[in-house]
Length: 552
Image 1: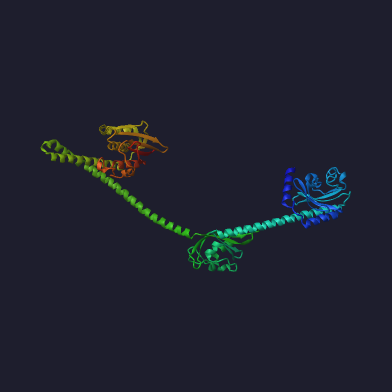
Image 2: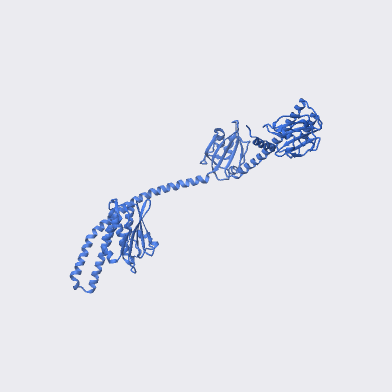
């Protein structure tokens, strides 16, 4: 069952679409109402439209019309039923006898007849109404003619609405065409259009600029390559008519990513990327074709430059890879050489130190002060040379010793290192502490012991003379790694030197002659063999904190 309220909403919407309420009635509508009065043989007739709250008498015959309340309207009583109404004497009809148009409040209508105005969708807009203050009967033929006249009124409404729609469509079409033209003349994409015979009918601004010509519909399609300067992508061979992208789109239905070169007289060549398709109407008939063209001249030049640079980089990469192989081989040979030389120097250096020691022990009383000073200097030099050779040996072993990975408990390694450095610890007065939760690391126990020994020995070696030496070790867990920190309160390392000190023989202050610049280089090699990292930070309050990143 239809919803009356919803149906009324739709009826009112249709009524307002006709745009006739409160609009002046034209001569055609007035004529139809006058003819209706003549057909019915009455002195008065009206065209009534019923909206939400009122009856609008759009045009009348025989009296001065106007608007009145819908509740007072006789036509509003039955017009939505869509039937012709014929009342000879309204005083005798139960639906109309109390209406103000009947009882004298507005008029004294006796005879009343109305034909509903029904739209093609079936909605009632109002009525064509005839009435008289005399009782009257009307024939069936007269009733039929009034119904016909009501249909004529609706047809006039429809014609008006269609005229407005056509006018609106024309305006919209004009706006749309102006918009399309503006877009085509503004964009930097070239657009070319042909009719169904292949003759060019449109070139937008970008296309005209590239070709140096406008569209010429009189030009035979076979002349397009010559007239517009169309060449292949390399810009060498002129296109044949079968190769022209526009004609291919017309013939094949669609083209994608075709490239051609436009060589216009007095202009640099332009490389264009073309995409296009047929233009087809609703019946499937081919109307023509359209092609959109993009200037890819700079893009292709850039691509060629990238390809050239890529080839050059690849060639350099091959040379670099070969150089890396050679450098790795050279480093291995240098490490082997350093290890071999250092090892071969150990015995003669030990012998030299022993002979010097014998001289000091046996002949001290026979030597004057000058000779004693020289002998003491020689012993110090030999001892320094022994330490240098020992450092070189440790560095070589850090790179050459086979990597034997196993679970290593760092707390145990710290205990072993402190035992090795007991003499140095006692002489320096250093206080060394480590948290009890140092992690177990998967690594080489020999190399890790050498690593921590180097770091603790360095911390004691570069302590400050004005305060006791404190060294602490701690660890911090991360999802994929451990960070072990060895912090001291020594003289510290300036920020500008914190990367350079890992280089071989690099020292912050060579004049102090406290080391050889090999210890941190050795630590770096050990961390690299464990796939870790080593960095330096400043200890709060002064000193150096060594951060060791070791994978879990």
